Structures are given as C-alpha cells and as structure tokens.
Length: 192
Length: 201
Image (cartoon, rainbow over the protein chains, first blue to last red):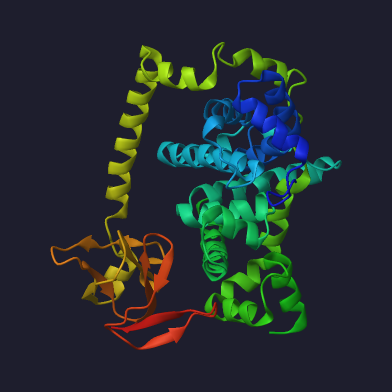
C-alpha cells in the first residue's frame, strides 16, 4: 500500500492548484493517481467490494467539493486519507449501532482474495470473518488503531500522525487493543 | 520468556516494539502470548489482495461531479432540499447514536464479579490545568474510558462501584493524554514510558 508519508511530486501539486480553479482534467489526473490505494484501504476496513468502491467515489466527491480549503499544511495524500478514514469511522459506528453480524457477510466478498487451495480458502475466509467480526465489537479507539496497524499496514509514526497521538499512546492502544481482540475472539468461540 | 515465544510475539507486534515492551505486554496479558500466533496469522490474512475498481471508475466519478464550480456548489448545496434532508437524517442519526453511546457508557460492573466479589464505592476526582473532557480507564473497566462529569469548580468527578482488588488506572484527558491520578499517588510503570496509578480496594 502507498504510504501516506510519501512526498508529492511537482506535477501533483500543479494538479491540486489547477483543480482548485475548477479544472476537471487535473482532478481526473489526481483521481487516477490516488484511487487505487484509497480503495485498497477502504476495502480492508469494510471488507465489502461494492461498498468500498462507493466509499472511494464519495471520498473523491468530498475532496473535490472541499479542495479550495486545502492549503497544503498536510500532504495531499494525507488529506485524502483523513477523508477516507472519517468515512470509515462513520461506517464503523453505524455498523456498531446496527450490531451487524459479520457472519451475514457475503461469502464471495470474503473468499475473493484468498489463496489457491479450496480448503485454505475456506479456512482463511472463516478466520477473516472471525477477526473482522471481533474487531467491529472493540471500543472505537482500539478498533481504529488495530485497523490502521494491521489492515492498512501503517507504521507507528504514520498512525501517530493520523491520530495526532504520541508514540507511547499508540503502542499502548495496540497492546490493549490486541488484548481486547483476543478476549472478543474467545467470547465468539464460546458462543459458537 | 524463551526465544521462541519472543519471536512469536515479535511477529505479531513488529520491530517497532522493544524487547522490554514485549516482555511487559506478555506479563500484563499472559493470554496474549498463547494466542499470538493465531492473531498474527489471522491479522495477516486481509493483506492477501484487493479486488480491482471498475474500469470506468474515473469516468463515472467525473460524471457525478456537479456542473458548476465546487465552491458555488458548496453554498448552493446547503440550501437545496435534498441536502437538507440528508443533513437532517444525519443529525437525527448521530443524535440517536450519541444517546445510545451514553447509555452504553453507563458503568456497570460485570455480573459475575458482583456475585463473587464485594463492591466498593470509588470516587474519582481530578482538576487538570487544561482539559475539556476527562475519563478514567483502568484494569477495572478493561481500559475502556468512563467519562467524568465536569464540576462547578472546573474539576472532573465520577463515582462507581468497583469489585475489590488491585487495579492500575489513569485519567484520559481530551481523549488523547494519559495522566496518573496525582491525588491518589502510588504510581507504577506502564511499560510504555508512562505511569499508572495503583488502586487497592
């Protein structure tokens, strides 16, 4: 995955500047540059193909609507990532309210990235569902930090930057989050 | 901790964690070590891949853009009925979500502990120099913050019944700063360079 700390190119800055003047071709260039990695993060966070694509579209629509307010204090990619993360936070919260059962997720969604063996595919699909379901039930601060660390593969420095937290706080969230995750998975196991 | 166990936990946590931190974690949560290989494997699975976006994604997106410039659309969008209905629906949703959150946050000691252990009323009070919100989190609530109520004198306070036992805890200021309870003293290292307060009931 693209790291949010990667520097922009001069061309990207130019596209942002043109886009702020309403240039749609420049916006299309920015979309083409960033759509894949934004979509990859969103897919890992929500694990549903169509929803991830819809959310990716919404990220760019929001970015286009707000790009005049982008002053360049943060990197453009970090700014986009924050929009995507805010959308994911809303999604996680609403999913939490609905208390959606991860077992109701479509099998195709869970198996479509698995490895060749059918047995492995089934086993991995179940593990994914179990871990993802357990993550949905964690308190927000721990869920998000674990998602960023393990699903988005961000470094601790990147998580500090995105969450505005110190390194020790982020480490603590990971440590406690893993403890919560383990207990949640044990609870699920007992229930089944 | 033997080298094999250390290797398993390192695989889960990554090189960013020092050996000392990993050992501290294993001591604080012995179950983590036994399940580290399972978690490590399961958390690695989502990295397998991402389905591709639709081939016409960018074209569809450009078609969905407003015809007018974005800043004009922003102002106009605020006043069309469709946006207002969305804003209304979103406000209602988050209002209800907030109420639900407040209900969920109501502190309740686990039933099993209530039956087995004697409860003690514990009063938490702190007066931080600069904080808009304060919560308390510790072993007694699995480190899920309980919000304290702001008092007329600017301090924050809350009272809960907690089963007898020994607990580490800290105050969480504005959702991002952990500080020990200076009034109670008796601090211990948390293994991450900060201190928690020890509460013995």
